[in-house]
Image 1 (cartoon, rainbow, N blue to C red):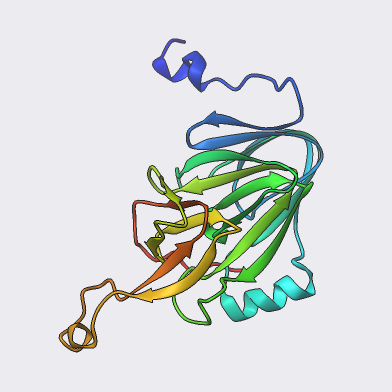
Image 2: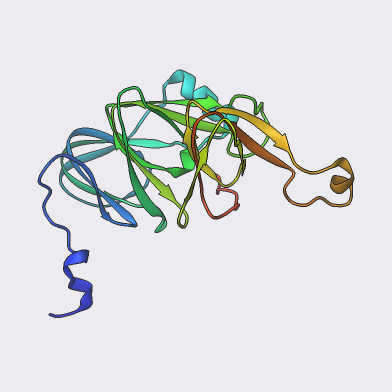
Length: 224
């Protein structure tokens, strides 16, 4: 049987070491030898002896999820084998987090990550309880994190001389050391006249970067 479908770029080769790699730009392959964590429902295929169990969030993170609606519903993948993860054909990226690093990522953009990474759902400082996407997950420790993004992301450097303002529905993540606050960019008069659609943004100050997706669509509700 012959077809471009069977081109080498589409074929899954056996893994040579444990951990995650990009299968292609829409899918991550994880060679599991022990345990990893993944977004619930993101497994599209697997082979080997693997179990997929709902992961508890811990009391603190569970309570924060009930208040914030932050979507980081996870499953534990354990055993030995290979699993492929994807979500709605979103683009996939792998981030290597070294000891001492910390990265803030919106829960809707998390695909899978190494068990050695620590994460905590946190309130974005300076944002209070208003706005969308303002309760994100802070990753630290040492390991790899797979991030998904609808479309091709824009990574914008942030410096102490040039703060960056981002739409709260478009932000994917940012350097955890950045200072955050809310910024209002339209006048009261404009709001009375119907508004510009750009009322409030997240302001980031300091030294680092922010990742933005090319869409302001609000994420669909998530379930526990």
